[in-house]
Amino acid sequence: MSDDNTPPEAAPTPPAASGPPPITPEVLKSAYNAFKKRWKLTKLDQESRIGRGPMSSGQKSQIAGIMPPDQFPRAVWEELVRQGRLKNTGGGFLAMP
View 1 (cartoon, rainbow, N blue to C red):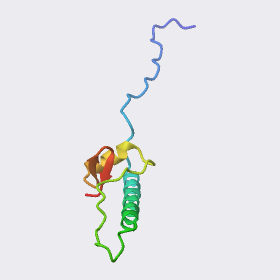
View 2 (view 1 turned 180 degrees about the vertical axis):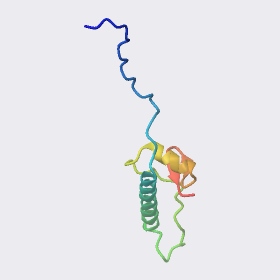
View 3 (view 1 turned 120 degrees about the horizontal axis):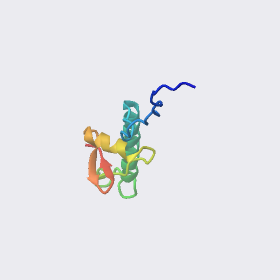
View 4 (view 1 turned 30 degrees about the vertical axis):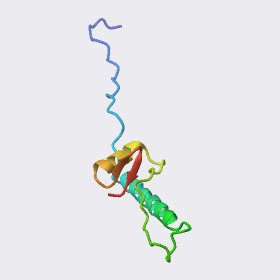
């Protein structure tokens, strides 16, 4: 046994909590494409309802916003709104700008 006065090794400190990991461009692109697809399908569905035929008044879809797909976290949608690629219409609904 040695009698030197060296301090015991300090336990490694855990890294500081820095919040969620950054969102990758691939995830943003995938989420944006999923939103565009849902937007298009919702618009086509609304325009194809009875009473909106080619011989009717010819009104286009007046969709103000849709709920984003739930496969992606809210942070992804907030980032797309911050970038200006989507528009927040309130109440959790988003729209194409």
